[in-house]
Image (tube, rainbow, N blue to C red; front, side, top):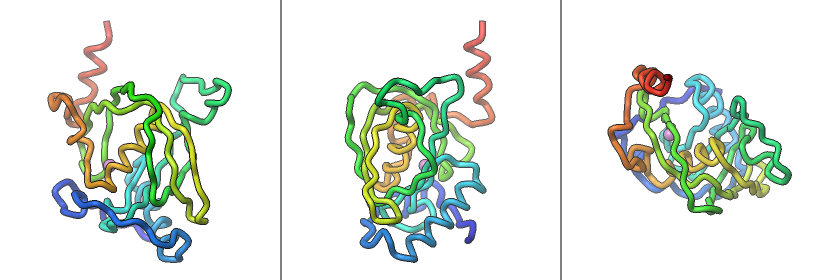
Length: 184
Ligand code: NI
């Protein structure tokens, strides 16, 4: 296991279309994912795409822990808002509802910044796991956001290019001003 170097905005590997993984069960893929998990944990991220560690393959990892104070209990949608640590290979996203939702995003390739991004709030995604088996889930909330953010990396897109209002691209260290504005 190793902590990998993370490519930052401006590196060409982040702007290219990544290639499909031919054999998800290959040992080199498992080793890559193990290193990505260690790298993401070290950097305190919620998701990481292979191009971010200079490997232009269609592979992402992410996790969506439960959102505080938000019960996730409606029948049949029980797991939409959360996901355990997941490796998704050759992923595809289907938008279930085009209604979009705004949220603040950060990216390990754009360190120190946060941006407000509108994305479809309800998606379905599928891809292969490290065992080569199909993973197919619906996702809402942060879960839907992190998957769309990571899959964008495979198509050479970083979140600032999804932003409608660049005045909402700010330094992380200034985000407390937003909370201050909201309070009475
Ligand atoms: Ni990112």
